[in-house]
Image (cartoon, rainbow, N blue to C red):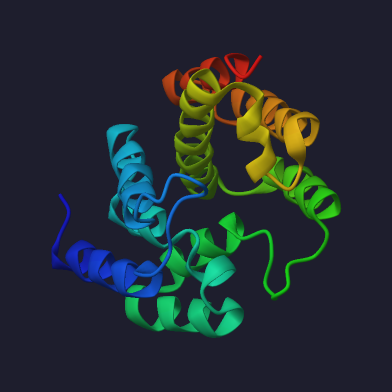
Length: 183
């Protein structure tokens, strides 16, 4: 069951990301956060993991360590640990794209399963959005990504392999199918 704590996390996430939209499509960013939390719950996650799904980008996109401290104070060490595990950059401007992604990929197999589920839910929603846009727009979709077509495909293919190994199951397969459709 999700409690009022989840409701509070939803409001907190919405406040943090209120002015943010998804790349190129203009969808309010909260829609992505809701989708990630839903995937977490649908695939067996508990309330801490669902809350982390709502807040997985809070530190990375909205204030780094200070925001993580707020997450910890409001929602506990468990949620904060998952959010930290999902964060690939703590500063603005973010470090160079390729080394940042390589570091995230290298660390992912050693992360707790609780964190990997939230990461998988995030990357699955992202991959499905990319696939949908790719099928609608063709190669023009890659211009919105720092890694371009080759880098983005490399990153998501590598993620697919790691997720299939570390957290095999229906969600890892769903992610892999979305990634395979990028070609």
